[in-house]
Image 1: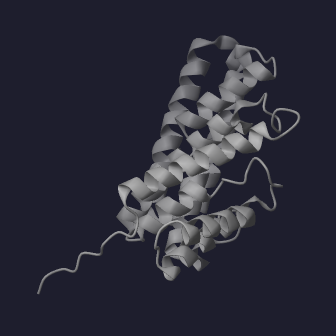
Image 2: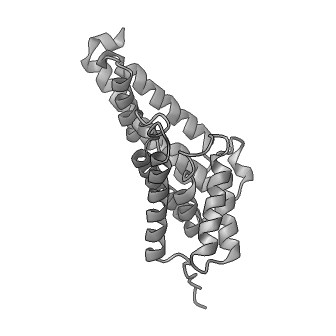
Image 3: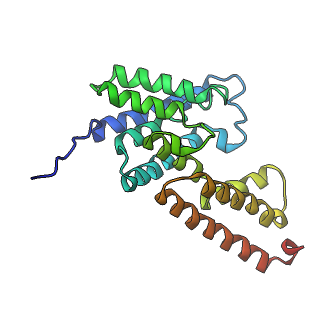
Length: 224
């Protein structure tokens, strides 16, 4: 008896079109603001940073979903739309607004199954959920895990060091600031449920610890 191969509802070209839509939507969100974008002087509040974060979450979510047996298409499409409203909606409302935008897009472009659209939109709407992940659908869990892991490692270190420049901090504060990334990684490791996400978290924690130790070893002032 052969193994049934499930046909993906999302072609490569359809996914590329979604990426273009999300990128353009984020850029328009910033351009439409009179002040040039909410806190745009912090690069992680820019359209470019937000889109890069989204792509990171797509990649992480796809990896977790594939290894944990979740529906990869649901996770990667939900990841693509999860922060689409981040720059033009209140923080408390961006998940629901993102789900609304995702539903409108998926229902008006292409012939996606209703069940697929529902799963994607439910995951987007719930991606800011702060409770236990084991009560959520596996696809939503994968999305949340990918989201919390994005800034838990080297990417988080790069961002925190960039932030130091904007806050006019000296390099002597670097070990302390990197410690915040380490704490974020430890929090992520405690929050995730899947074996795949836990493995990624611990790998990233190890890298951040190494970097912090190198800083402290080479700059005496950082040990004080």
